[in-house]
Length: 248
Image (cartoon, one colour):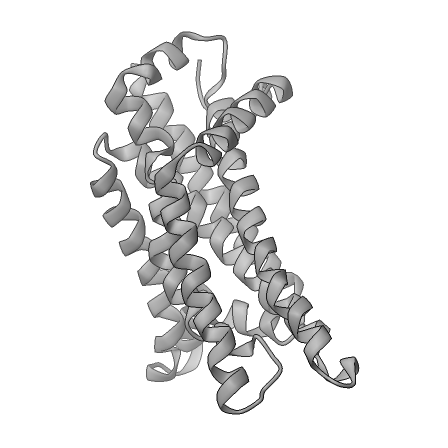
């Protein structure tokens, strides 16, 4: 078997994704990550609300992207590393599955859990909609844009985390590897002002900051969506190549 895409089996991908999602639901460590996530986002929500009376979740958009560089790799670190550590990956590899089946199944299980977690942030604008008078003062376009930017960013970091998890049996090493890659992409978005000309354009595009900033304003540009899709596909492809190399 190899990393070719034409042989993907949808039923196998669904089964692996459902298994992965169930693992998250039953994992205490996943709930620890969610607790930290909701605790910090709740703080960022309530602080401007009570200090300035600002009815918005805009305060989250500056800190949450940095928070996700650590929390998402923490969720993804065991996707393949735990399978390899426990020896169950060898059993998985003997099944009639393509490497793409394994990579996509694992990734989609993570994606379902993560998107459900981000959907939970809708609690804040819903509460705001009842507190603000009149309700029209709440910018729903910006709110949806911010949550979509968190979704895209987390899905990208999840693909990075999956790749890092395929490199190491040790989950902590996988966590650190994924964090460093995610942090570099985050950092690039902050460095474009230090460059000029074409180099500044390249740095700005490679960094995640400019893409999530546009979406956070409720502006959905195809270039931003292509950026996230390309990075996700790129790291899924690297994961498949890694899985393929482990078979030989």
